[in-house]
Length: 270
Image 1 (tube, rainbow, N blue to C red):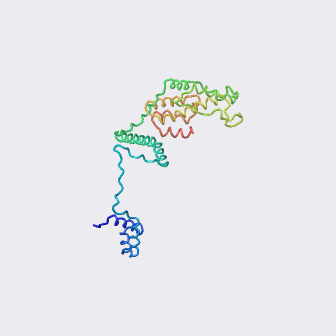
Image 2 (cartoon, one colour):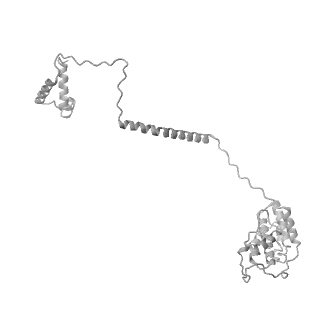
Image 3 (tube, rainbow, N blue to C red):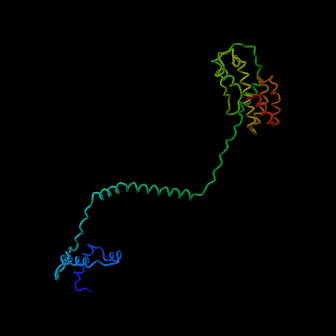
């Protein structure tokens, strides 16, 4: 142990200032400072060393219970704290939403899987008795008098006259004739124009028979039985009485010959 600890400490401090730590000198260069450098260090230490016998400075005692001095807040720190207070409520709200989503997902996963119920097919609508009565009434109606009235129908009145004729004609449940009468040629000299009431009657009844033919092929059970009855009457409707291509339709419908009726619809009801 050295007899001059204060002097040795001063030398170490001066050497550290001039040359760094001693270990760095030994580690980097593998040698100690030269004699001339050591003399310079010693001279500096004598000039800065505390005289012998000088007592160390007394430590200032802090009275018991005195709070520590408050740290001076920098403007940057104050801004950072204000920013933290600004986004803290949003962060709490985001965490709450995330927690709710996690809980909801957990509940969905925890719920047992349920088999999806198959859609309930709508019950087929029965053919009303009034519809069958209209069919029988047309079968007993007199023949169309083509030469009785040769007055040309004004084209503007054609839809109303057709609607009145359709009201006396039977149609399947939920179906009607969507023919656009107003779109027909207005010039009576046009080959495709509709000019007389007899032409309207024939066209309405024939189109209704085609609708019943398609209804028969798409139905079953009581609905098909009612369609068979209407098709049996249809060949006696005034517009179809002389239409020989339909004479076999009643027997084909009664026998359930779907192929024959589908072919008749393809040929006549396009």
